[in-house]
Amino acid sequence: GNSVTQMEGPVTLSEEAFLTINCTYTATGYPSLFWYVQYPGEGLQLLLKATKADDKGSNKGFEATYRKETTSFHLEKGSVQVSDSAVYFCALSSDSNYQLIWGAGTKLIIKP
Amino acid sequence: DTGVSQDPRHKITKRGQNVTFRCDPISEHNRLYWYRQTLGQGPEFLTYFQNEAQLEKSRLLSDRFSAERPKGSFSTLEIQRTEQGDSAMYLCASNEWDVSSNYGYTFGSGTRLTVV
Image (cartoon, rainbow over all chains, first blue to last red; front, side, top):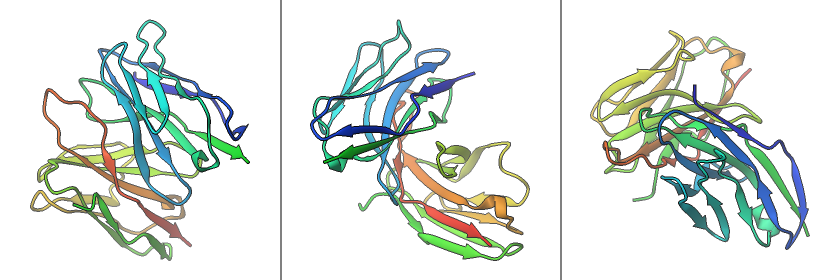
């Protein structure tokens, strides 16, 4: 079945450091891939998405590229800020499935 | 449009009581989804509607759970005879879906249920 695997957290970085959060997936067909962010006490917000292979999603300085050959969708940011501290979820939606399949989430802590 | 709204934000109830949550999706969205999220986990799918039709229910959704979307607009999720294991964040999401689109949802802020 479809599944998403994320790197375990928490990930702790200093401000202005480079961020990578790994995400790999297993899916049939051609899924769409997403990164969602959840700030403390809040709901889930769509951060970025990619709907086909080699697409790059980007938003607020975050980027992720849909790599079909490695079944990956790693999240990157060149210079993180304290305000980026949150839990980040990788998810997929297959073309035959209405559901989002979620990773377990990665907590990111940015220290000033 | 103010996005997806959920009410209440927090609910504390005694074990055995019934609770009902409401979700108001984005008005032009035809699909509405309910998910449950426990601490430290990703969301788990519960059920979804296309317009007023409930098209799928997860095996996670026991007989104590029921959801409705009577006019294809807002939705309610009721839990009867609550148990401590029902304590979680209940998330509602919506999107405008057709066969050519497969994009992410817009989530509400969730209703946090605590069963004591």
